Length: 171
Image 1: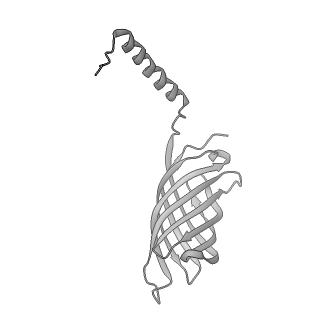
Image 2: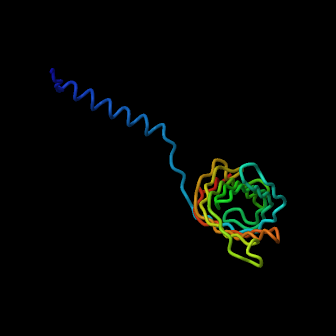
Image 3: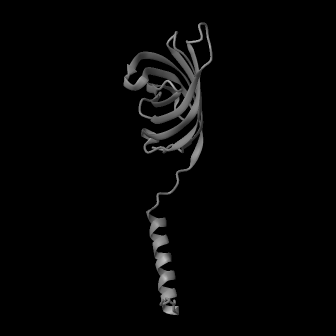
């Protein structure tokens, strides 16, 4: 069995190659956006309920509330949930100026918390990810947690989002 031995030249070339590769990746990696606190609260009116194949239920709604850096907000949301209590929601918070908006994807779990006949009220917790936006929030990033209460009988939901978002651009 022949063994390979590094000589001094091989070590210099190997070390130089490692430095070049690390430098290239450092230059190619985007700089991490500065994150600032983000809080949003809102009330959604459920505008549609669709029962989908596979035991899924889709809730469509319009949300209005307030959000840090946006002020008063409005926008659409769509939530798809299964019978095991898992859900995925997409939401858009459009700021009062009509130009700035934040796009969110939310993943979580819900459970019945009673309410009258025990079928109306659901509570949920989960996490959100900021997936972009418009205006001052173009290419926004961020994440955090959510807590919501849905009254299926009344057709409303309230929620609070707490976490971070990338610092808004100063357009």
